[in-house]
Image (tube, rainbow, N blue to C red; front, side, top):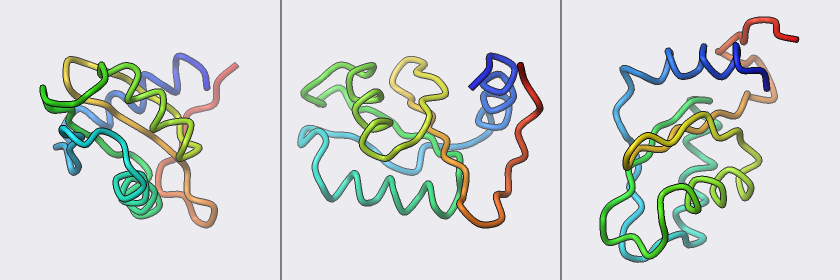
Length: 98
């Protein structure tokens, strides 16, 4: 993913609110399944990491991205933004990049 595409996704994610939270239980199978379902429905999602989470935000974000086959768009403070295009009829059209 190019920086231009990532910037485009950051712009789309700016008004979004966090739909899931990572808490004291950290990453578990249930949370990963919820993230999978949300990505399939929305393509671009924002999550919130609570202070009680057992790992730091960047580690959680990278683990989530790899386990859901998604792209980590950004980590800002306690917010994580993930993107994964739908297999059929994607809603978000990324700009062409080099």
